Image (cartoon, rainbow, N blue to C red; front, side):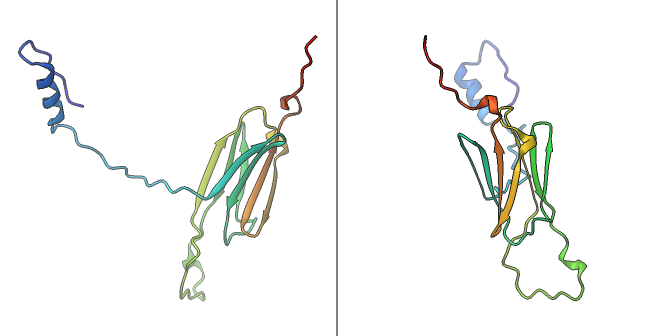
Length: 140
């Protein structure tokens, strides 16, 4: 927003109009386009679940890392031009690179994360810490 000139001869309406038509600043269009990767995140009394779509990928191509309390899942697409004998006539499956990350609450035990992959769906399960599970408290 431009500089506001507060002088006695300007009314609030004058300042509003001046700031509205101020051409010093331009609206900037976003340069990064955020693509949402298809996934589901849900929780039950046992823990936290992630279902991440990985169509056309193998489990060796996906990198899963845990750093402190951050879970990172990524895939880097290789250049198709590496194999000169490969002639692609049509490519309809989008194997886009992705780099996903989530900060996981301390009530989940990241050291016991389980991962499985079936039919192009990567499933991650993070169990709750034993002391984090809900307990029934009786009133004395």
